[in-house]
Every structure is written in structure tokens, then in C-alpha cells.
Image (cartoon, rainbow, N blue to C red):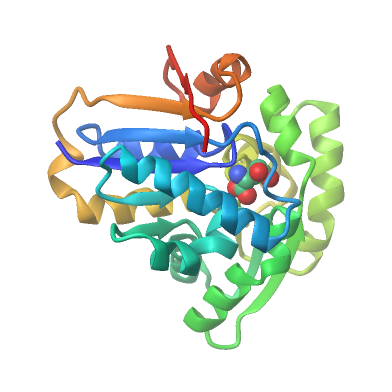
Amino acid sequence: MPRIGIFDSGVGGLTVQRAILDALPGLDTVYLGDTARVPYGTKSPEVVTQYSIRNGRVLVAHGVEMLVVACNTASAVALPAMREAFDVPVLGVVEPGARAAARATRTGKVGILGTQSTVASGAYQRALAALIPGVEVTARACPLFVPLAEEGWTDPGDEVVRLVARRYLAPVRAAGVDVVVLGCTHYPLLAAAIAAELPGVTLVDSAAAIAAEVRERFPGAASGGPASHAFLVTDTPDRFLGVAPRFLGRPVESARHVDV
Ligand code: DGL
């Protein structure tokens, strides 16, 4: 059975793994959450690149055939260096997300939501500009969405969630976008709250977009299973194990500590 490596700064990349497992139940995976160093979204491109390469080395040592960079921040800043560092194919979430947005937009006005580093990198903006001539991008960093999602505060009826979403999304709504990319691992959990503030706007989930591209590479894994899934973390596993099932949508029974 093919085996791929997936990494993220922490638990959030499990939303990407979830989309991949939904599409490819026969695929073996090794997930690495760099829980000792999270968040990446406020760190410099140099540091995120250094961490990403270390994570990739651990996964490649586990014999994976492909590296999926689930973290949007790492995908935005570290992909060229990772592609140079490793012989296996390296897939990031930015390009699939941008392609899905390009397919979905009718007006050429696209919103990007992500971490501060993802937005500042301009990676989504460049990818969209290459795909949609004359695209108008409105990019917004929404850092408080990350702790909200980890805390399980995602209900659109929750007053705190509504207020935070409204504050971040008002300028995006005012820009008149017709498509918004959820450019951060945690945001799919807040999709209902985001949709409530952006009526009539199509939400593009980078996780689903990359899952479709992984499926193209391993069509045989679309059926079959049960597959094996290993979880590695760089901090002690307790907190990861508490939050992981909500992000993965499946039980996560054990995780092993690794030093990277
Ligand atoms: N995984 C990160 C991302 O998708 C969000 C959390 C963090 O800042 O590390 O950009």
C-alpha cells in the first residue's frame, strides 16, 4: 500500500489528513505535528523553512513516497526549499487551493484568509494572479481563528465566534468577493461561522483541493483499506491526543514523541 507523509505545525493539518482519508481510504499515512514549535503563522519565512525541512527529513526516514505540506504557512514560504531538499514529490496546499478558487470565481474577485505569515508571503496572491488575469485579491489574516478552533469554539451561533468572524470578515465582505479561500488548516472547522458573515460567497477549502490532487497520484488507494496511520508529535502527545479527533473526524488512539 502506498504511504505518504503529512506535516503541519501542530494539530491543524489533521483537517487536511481528514480530506485525504475521505478521498483515499486505502492510503497509509505518517502524520507529523510540530507541536513543540507551533504556531508557524507568526514566524519568519527563514525559521518556518528550517522547521519544515527538519519535519520532512523525519517523514522521509519513515519511507514515505510523497510529502504533503498540510500547513498553509509552510506551503506558502517553504515549498521551493523543500522541493530542492527531497527526492520524493512535495505537495503544498497553496497551489491546489488557488486552482480551486480559479475554477469557482465568476467575478475574478477572490478573498484569501490565512495566518499573518501566509498573507504576508503573497503566495496565494501570486498563485491566483498566475491563474486569473486581472484578479482582485482581498487577503485577510485571521489569527484568532486558530485558538478558537482548538478550543472547540466554532458554533456560528456562539456570540464570541460571531463577533470575531464579523470583525475579520467585514472588509472581505465589503470588497464584494465571490470566492474565499480558507487558507489555514484550522479554518474549515469555522466554515459555518465564516459562511454566515459572507452570504452568497463560495468557500474553497484548500484541504479538499489538495486531497483531490493526492488522489490523482494514487488512484488505487481510492478503495481498499484498512490503512495504517501513525502520528508523530514533537511535544508530549497529551494535548494533541485531546484535540486531534475533532480535527481528524476519527479517533486518534496514540501518538509518539519524536525529536526533529
Ligand atoms: N497550520 C497553520 C497554517 O495552516 C496554522 C497554525 C499555525 O500558525 O501554526 O497556516
